[in-house]
Length: 209
Image (cartoon, rainbow, N blue to C red; front, side):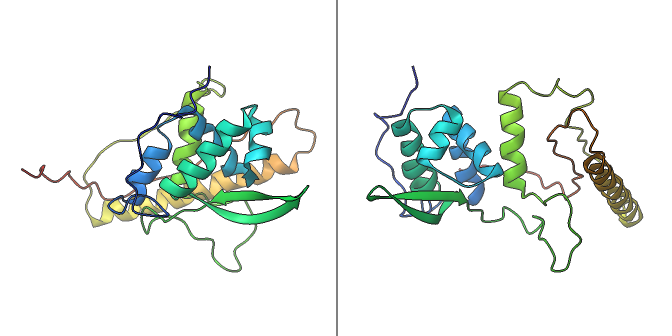
């Protein structure tokens, strides 16, 4: 039986967009802390949707979908926003899309005049897709799927070399995507997330006493 959280405690949010003291990351983590919300967010990464269309796409009860979409994701977490209103049979169907406050200035921005290609993804979108893949135990679908992270120390010359290596990897990965798209005879295709991350590693501050 699906838990619709009908007996959830009163929200202590500070108005639309989440609790006043929450950071964008707090709201993302709270939104992902329920399997139904994870499924809804993953669907919204692909395209906008209403409670009605999402309930059909995800095969969930309409009331449950509407609760998580309107009450939690929109009002409490502030991760989605109204993108369209469609009159249908005397009622207004509200269509929602993802709304992100970048967690960091490192989030990619599509530059004007950039060449068409695979869409850039924010950190939140990558996080949502990764969590969905882990939920579905999909990492074994393609051999080599993995998170490959390590912590190291580099000087300025080492950092420049890492940046060059990252740029080269992204160039080759994008070329592979474009070549795959051009092979119309390909018998199968997979949606994958590909990227390189390199950023300063800051130690956690001591807990406040």
